[in-house]
Amino acid sequence: MKPFNDYSDIRGFCYSGGYRIPQEQLKRELGYARSLQLNSTRIWLSERDYRKDPAAFLSKLTAFVETAWEAGISTMPILFNGNGLHPGDLEQGYEEYAENYIKDVVQALRGEPGLLMWDVMNEPSCNDYIIEAKGEERKARWEKVNEFLRRSCDKVRKMDSVNAVTIGHTYMGDVEDTVGEVDVFSFHDYLPVRRQI
Figure (cartoon, rainbow, N blue to C red):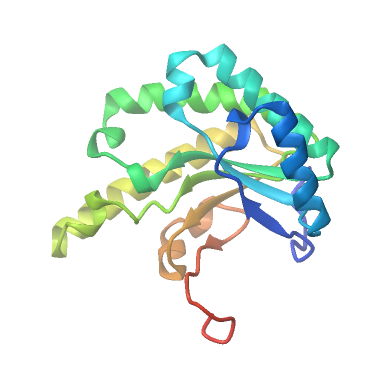
């Protein structure tokens, strides 16, 4: 899928079980989603699962994307989860691991017709590393996270120049620092009613 000019027809849902769910259950639950007129899912990928057995992880992930697409549902995989971000995740040793992880996942899925877009990180500002910092330290940490996001977006683009890239930011204000890295602006609004959004 190439980036759309208009994403207003996307009716998506987050599917936390994603690729870990047995096929029979997966098909049943995707059927429920279609009956609700939902046509896209966003799934969290687990780096821990990848580390344990990269081949099995990639096989399950690919099977999920293909099964969802057969049900008429596209997939937006989330490469990293900011909610569990650890300061060590931003250091050089991790960066090398992250590059291999991104490469393997992107190479496995970039040609899948059911791939909607890449979500590089879920809620990068929603973690203790950012929330507990104050003043200048918070700004420095946020910039360090944004540097990681920019490099990660760049890595995804170099391996997949066709599919759209986004970052699932926590707040609308967070989008500004990576606006040049993404094709689609994404932020999560937890306000209770549409009028407040």
